[in-house]
Image (cartoon, rainbow, N blue to C red; front, side):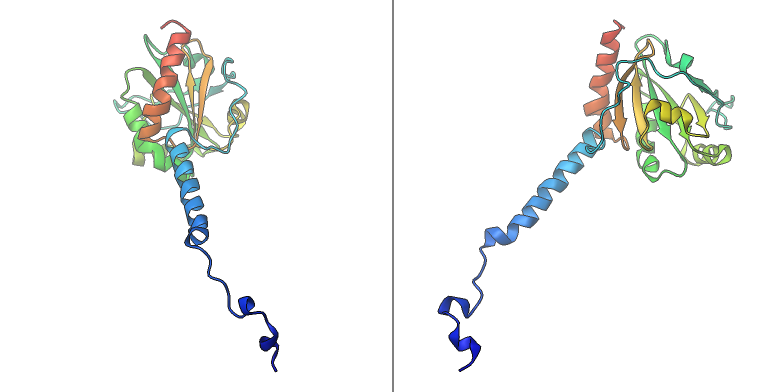
Length: 208
């Protein structure tokens, strides 16, 4: 008599698992994937913490420009903290941290070019830990969405702003106070569902 002959009847063959148990891991994965896709589309990276600078004046800085001309042929201006105030009637300043070596910056670039046309937005950039020639080549090749962009060669300004990694985008009120921080690549959905209301809030806070 073999060992198999001594097994009870219900142990002689494996019991079939139910279809629900089989499909449960796939259903869970699909739900998580949908959640993360929704968060990235409308609210940035769901794993990060909000900025401690929200509601506070933007850190002081003064950066030299990326050496590339604007669309009208004039020289690209640099960027300082003073430039964030008084962007114009009914406008906020959007500060976008980017870099030519950043893959996700390429993903959001068309969205930034569309955002530039928003009449309530003055879009400026900070090239984070980038070389001048690389940043300039990027803007020439991809198109320049910024009215001004500064070179943060050392990354010191990014540290002061609490940047985790590019791209990151900030809504700055007309009085120079940081109103909102978006982490990750912007999308068309995010500009409508997230930035739009945050711009409304920023302008309402200063009565503009």
